[in-house]
Image (cartoon, rainbow, N blue to C red; front, side, top):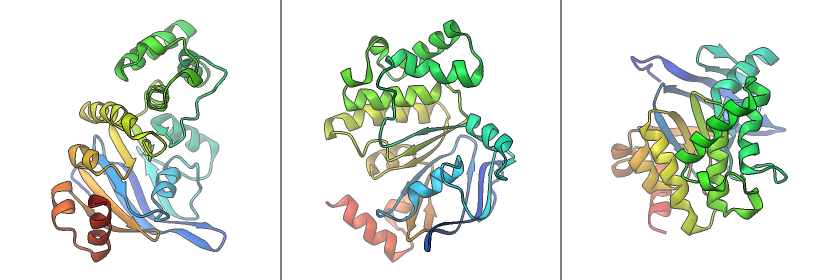
Length: 250
């Protein structure tokens, strides 16, 4: 893949990942530049989640190189920690601590990992709760919130670590339909602020609005990379055309 003029913030070079004898990623390469918004789509089991989980090494790849902002994953704790400080991640499940209030869920990381004072961390947490439009929920516990609100808390929690890159792994797929937009709106706002984002999602309306680059994966390979207007109107591969037809007309 040709390098952009801009420096790549994330470089994924010939990465392969195996689970036992099953190859989940087959020599995948992708560059993401600073401020770029990439949406990754594809059928279930195509390797989308595995790819983004390899970026912050929730999954360790066996072959190839992953470099984030100049730091290459080399298996050492030092590089892993340095990379994890740059990368925030939001999952399908909200992974909030049920016994902590919303505010405490948000301040935990900055206090423990970034050495912030409780007061500063609370100020930062309130800023981000404001940004995801639920500052009034700060004293509640996760179980008192709707799924959409919990996911927005999870996004705010990631932002409290002030990452350079945000990874979203199907962030709306566990939500009721009426809550999906409130989460996508927050993500759209985040994208418009210039955050570098990689989003695994089936929400094609969001992808059209927000993505600079669409990536289609199938059977552990990147089959197609294109800007949204080309991707949706005239994808090159039959596999991608077939996928889009299914997903856009169901």
